[in-house]
Image 1 (cartoon, rainbow, N blue to C red):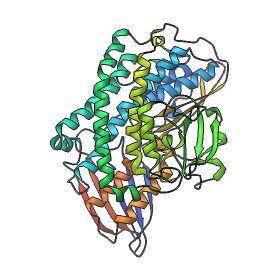
Image 2 (image 1 turned 180 degrees about the vertical axis):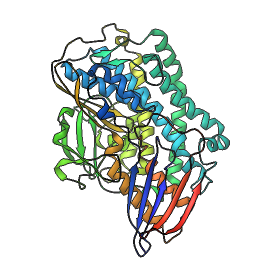
Image 3 (image 1 turned 90 degrees about the vertical axis):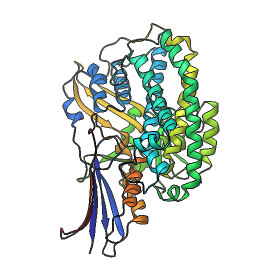
Length: 474
């Protein structure tokens, strides 16, 4: 009897979602879907607002990565004003984004994902979490918390707040880096580098013990997309778009983000509020591509800083062409943390970050503007159309989690095919399937989270509606 397994909600991600696993008559996995069950409506209710307000409004989409939205929105505003922002403002925005990369990647690695591969897939859910990490290795847990705090400290020093800083604006930024702030960041850097080394040592051991997970956790050919500099160097807040395939060949390069519609289509499926972008020349769903740390390292030719460049060489040896295992998103995050720390150290030596020339002033010079920036989870697009008074007529947001939607579905199906058989729903299987989603660190446009225990209810349902098996958590 064909049946369906539902995992609802998926835990230890930013937001709430569910997974459906479809079984055939023989008891084998036929397909899987990742569903986003929240509806926010940001694109619609922003209509009629002045474009200048958007950096402050759209950062409320998320409490984990508000910097990503405020920067992409500010860049869309730059395009509407048709200005080049002052060099100091560009560097300061970049420093803010580096702080965002550090804090978000640290949260993902140490708190959301590490409980699985450090404590074990079969560890009871009640202790397979950050509190379990604290019990098993207090110093590691503390170091992870401190590393995230360092990234948040950079955001607060520049923007005045750790969350939702009203600092980046169309045309530039509101304030420069103070000498006190510069000294505080510099003093914290050695500890941040030391924690990152600990994380690398931990991950290298994990790769030796998790060879099977590397092979089956989202290991499939796809395209990869992100921003790169003109010479192919890793980018996070500038550059142009590049698409590569799983062999590492470049399909399209140096695409102005303003022209993204020539390369990215957006499909809508009736099972999720999450859109499914795809590479337009290949169509849907053949144009599946991935974004985020794994994609950025696949498309980049170098990181541009020495320590991260050495790690990138090791990373690229893990694939024939591109590195295709989604389990290695975790490794890519650590390399990006290291690169971010090296770039932060470089910026601290730049006196221009104390400049008072921080903002270009102009009116409405274009009725359309696109801003693109690399959020921790992948490339983020803000596309605004305004009238001559600067009021928004249309808003389109393409977020990283949406661009990874097709890949997450395929990842869940691949893992389930290896662990799901018949009517049984073992705990370790549930966690492995959920971890396939955690590899991508999805952020479901959610700025608040539940307090306390998050329940998990999984049912195996026959097509006639009969419940064949079920498990409860919480």
